[in-house]
Image (cartoon, rainbow, N blue to C red; front, side, top):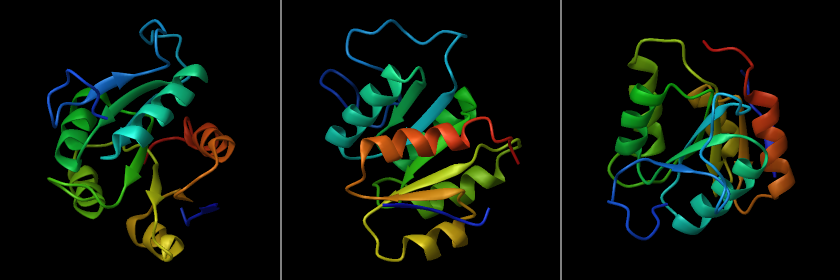
Length: 154
């Protein structure tokens, strides 16, 4: 389930290291990609599925297994959208959002990925554009990303 708000680690990868994810076997994203999505998600299965699906949809996906790696990736890669799990090690989604907003702008919209029953409240509190409640529908995920990439940065 998703709603509007007001406003990975695979084998052979170092823990805490952001990775570029796309469809398995797909060529690396190029300047022709639809947009760059930072995926901050500590569940490797979710990260792999989301990376593959968004890669197939033409997005460049930079996956980070925790909030600290996501913050590093946000500094270095300047995403067009951040998909943010709230419960992660090393820096949770709340702390990531505060630290991300402290970085020089512009800032990409945030879309929360959460199991919380209070997703709408969390989205409002973090200034997120939208939220998806886990488990989410893949079509809803792609639609949320499509709606929010290129919405303009803050």
